[in-house]
Length: 388
Image (cartoon, rainbow, N blue to C red; front, side, top):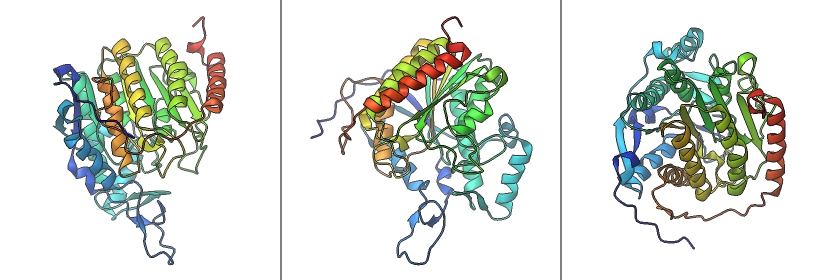
């Protein structure tokens, strides 16, 4: 049985999360069909909304406005990105392709990724809102900012859309931090799918450490040629600075906690970044239709605590949080609340109890896999070696 929620204390200025949001992002409608295909096979009476639909984010907004965490939230208005801002991460040719698709009334850019009327405006808002959240931190107006955005972005590569993503919101923010004087940025991505677009954007850079904890799904076609495997470590100066953690299906709270403690924290300690970007995918939950992992609210809460501790130690508390996946309309909102509770770290007890409780977990196999990943990365990534 869920315990009664804890009563939060009055927030101090340093305990606030600055949330950047614009309701115009709700205008992106990827349509209906058989799951994310947009296909009507002709023999189903009920066609479902595309998984990346507005309702999932409506619940995220409402739980932050009316849930127990609401006293700790400061709301800020988002904005559309300028086309010139997109070129810090994306190619002109690719941006032109998206503009033309919008002008022609929309198209399926790649499998499951539909740019429909309203989608391009929403994508520009997602990118600009994320840049505004990062700028808020860079200007010293707050330490922790959260870009509550859609469509998501971490699969979007410099010259290619992928996996519901058009523009790489997190990648644009990382580049803004670098261009504004930050020396090194760490990206911690816990979406259930590999953050291939962000990795690709900085694959040859030694200034960005990208760490992705994802289910071991491999490539899913031409738009996503990367496998998310441990041997995709980067190239040139960036070799070793892309750390993939492909976790076995069914990994839950304890498995993710072990990966954070034994892979993420030691890597960040070696890298010593001065900015942290936390890419939050809520599709790693036990009940998400788009993933096969088993995180509960408590798992998200503990990951949030861990990321906050990393930011406090290495980036003077500066932490940008960027929203990615999460497709269970209800539980995604609850897991978001839990993750941000962890980042705030204002109560030993949950502010919001888990309505579904836990999912049974045997972490023994996950730990064996994580140990094998650790041994491989320590032997292969130059900056992780003891004499580095």
